[in-house]
Image (cartoon, rainbow, N blue to C red; front, side, top):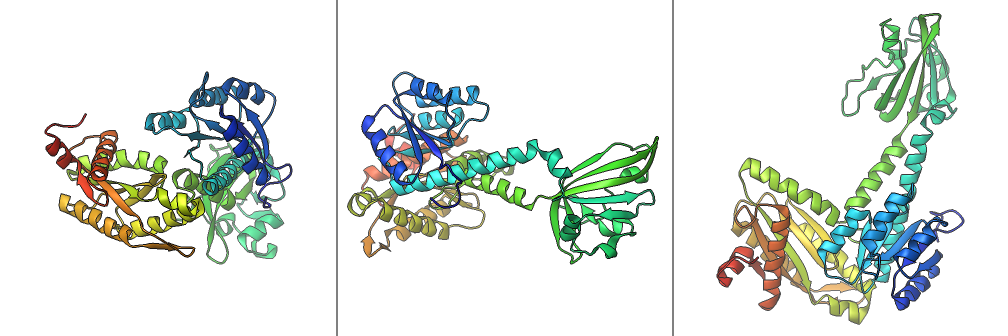
Length: 443
């Protein structure tokens, strides 16, 4: 393992009633230097979790007795800080997958397992979990951190002049001590609220207004350095009293750049596919209802293209999943080339992708994008000396022509895609055409 994890190595609990799969998972995970424990069912897993702490749980959705989502719910309710859960399923059942995410699972991978994909999923899940624990630890110890010497500390007298400043504060501000001692604090501490460029915020209002005598805590302000650059800080301003009179104050501030970056990374990983870096199903499930709501208010149409790759499984079977992953990476790059800035492409999982067209003004526009996509994916993909030929079957659903909500729109696009498959693949079908041909709306 890399230095990302300290000793001991991360511990993983496998929960699956399939003895063969447990053995394969154990061999793979131990080969990656993880510590592995097995449970044959949900009840056994819950018993183990009462006495052992794990960094990750890999669990089958469908098990006798307590199934995966139910175990997930128990874990979330019983453990104060539950580990992340990665579900494995052989079911082609979107409801089971959605139920797992609602129960608290952080990701889902389908059988047969693509081992390189699993390796990367585990890496990203563990990194996100460790980052989250670190952010929570920082929050719990916030007061202690502010008082530590690593934070910037500055004393201000009753005339609002800087009376002392510590080395950490000098370093953050990019100034020398003799440049700031005796200066008005607002000449040195040029602070703005996040998202503004007005660096005139008074972070010690109690020095001007005798009625404001409480401490002030500011979350994620921006503090200006001497060189004109700025950085995010958390800041606490505390008044100093002599009797009932404010005679000065203490500013304690902390550079939160790393904390912001960690939070952004966690948010990014939650919404993006670890292999292709495209937005994932989690992002899509949030974005589609928003897009429909906006289109409804503006009285315009949006189009959804459901893409399922043709002839992708034989590539995995013939050349292995590592080649298959490289093919998916090139597919993702080609799909991105078909879009305008206002449109988006997401990977739902496996070889399924969707394109959400929010700027298309006609059905013809959606058909043109679908045809262009098919043509792009018809071009051979060369990876590791192999020339791979795939294609795509695409289903198109139009709002508000044939749907009024996100769930129906995705379902209709999926139905149209399967119709394209039935008609010989490597083509697109409109849901409205499918309904017309069938003579009645598909339920």
